[in-house]
Length: 493
Length: 93
Image (tube, rainbow over all chains, first blue to last red):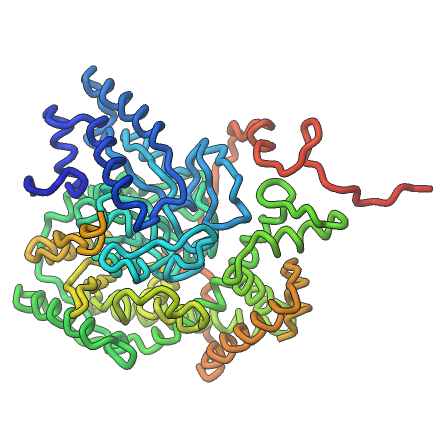
């Protein structure tokens, strides 16, 4: 790893450098800013940056360390932030015109915890508007390019964080995952992304999209780095009544454990619609685990293919409710054309929201409306129970489930823009995990013939992050896919 | 789906063009979702929350919240220490 440039180094390597004095937080901050200045014109991963603040906080970090009082081993490490997570004094656009001029008055709990460890939140990373999308093309501000092929999308909705991590603009980033928004962009950009168990990480200060599905999680270039960041942000928070009181284990230590896992392979995730090269790469990974002594067991999740339909009726209903707060009264865009107080709502929302957000809110209003609620929302929740039961039955037999993360590799800009349904099916292999609230990780497992990364997904039991990270790290330690660097962005920079 | 009535419930003022475009797209999505109608859910309880969800109660303790200044800091329009909106009630005359 020592021959890698500083901007591609792991959190562990950087922490060791900071500890032994061969690296300073200021030098690290200058390196990531320099890297970002070089590649940002072609990538457009950041909606905005606070470089001066990063440098000032790095000076403070170095001062603490010289005084022998670093806040933790990770003091001085910059972390990129999806522009959906509140950082006091910084913008929180959510990728939307609605919140273009908003400044967060407080830190999200995950940010407060990072600060307690000395990590420095840096920049506002691009996303689909209000995290609704699978390509980051629905951002109101800019399209982010995939570092592996600048004519393709980075995935979404955490496309900014994934592209920035893959291109070495940040060592790691925080994203959110409601239906695959951490895992699918991690797969498209050849990096590692973890969606923790629903309840593992506080959502306080994170813009709510679909509360029964949303989860904050880390995106990084290795399983170990993901584990480090997850350990810092996880744990109970009195400000989020859905956050669990279970103790958070040492997840970095967990990555070093190894045993013969029983791994379930669900036939439904290898059926029609799966790109052949993606399928081949994932099957090769399955063979690897088998050769290393794991027991590979075919399983069935018969209701999982209904996940996309259930997801849309669930997520839109919850979005309809959650996004009611954007009404132009207390914060956000207020229309100048409103004729009276009530007119402010309809016009501010019409002017502030983009097409995809409007589609989802209106669909949510419909599936909850009287006369249709039983047929749509309530029925979806019953099928959701069947999906949860499928997973519970499978986990009575196996330790982990292995699938592709996405049916395809990164697609070209514009390919699915005019067909919302095609865009939704990008998340076919990830949404059912959110419906069940399970933890899952995407790690790179190969490149296709066009030099685009392929991701494999490991799914764990509720609060089973330790096993998940251990198995993912076991695979990663014996392959070099996570060390491959994106060709396009290197040529362009 | 009655797109005009539903958009009204959602408080989004759609243009004529948007009504047509979004209406068609939403009809497509609902056709896709219709596959759920064929699933036998007789006697199945609705989920609402993922598995492993635990009910949490907060301690009934007073905490320092937002200052009025912070709460008003992003207001599109304010007057003294209040959010300001156009007049809602008509003058009595």
